[in-house]
Image 1 (cartoon, rainbow, N blue to C red):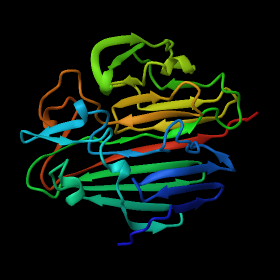
Image 2 (image 1 turned 90 degrees about the horizontal axis):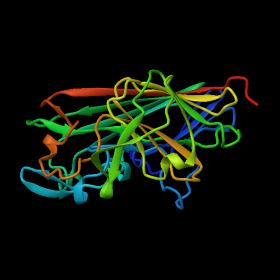
Image 3 (image 1 turned 90 degrees about the vertical axis):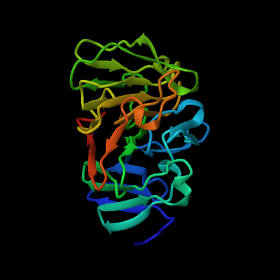
Image 4 (image 1 turned 180 degrees about the vertical axis):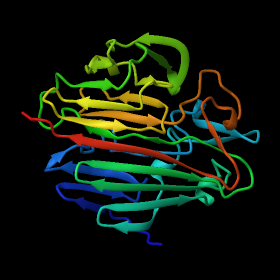
Length: 297
């Protein structure tokens, strides 16, 4: 097992990527010198494409309840800030691993193994996120991927970008309440009947667009010039679009779970959409980001 602080550089033909052991997070991805992940600017957001675990979204008052005890839990869990071990590495792939220890047990008193494999090819960056339960009781968890793609993309004008869902989606999303909690109220989203959502900064003035239990597992983030990033996430039921008005990124997120509802005071294992993994079991979550060059400008 190799412990490293430097990004792991991957290469495959015209594609290059860099994966940080902090959070097993891609911090760069480009094809033919076209940057596809945004360059971090802390004035907007201090991350690039974090991996989320053991929760996704906000927990009420920044805490979860486990075995009757309130425990601190940061938004999207502790994995984004954790140091992963590099356990396998080749020119075009790397697998990183995080296991439980004193730093995790204060907020999450479970045994676990979180493995994240990134595989780069000429036109795509693919992930397999594996959660294992080496403990003797069910493991409550959620995982997610949170990439910030460039907006504008590939030098196109900012206007004209859109997200095209593979299937028609409901033209409404939950209202996000103070503290990042999910309310029962809904707000309209101007998504067309064919699943096309024209991007506009005003969409993100009231927080993220969370399509819970989405009909689509595949989305195209298009720049209006025939170029697109296709997000294919068959094992993630929730799709989230997030940015900040004027920010140079669009996050097309893939989640297995979501944040606490307003008023929720139950145990973590009772949180809506949380998954329970049996002792000795493991489960894989696959996703792929595909660059489609099209005709270009």
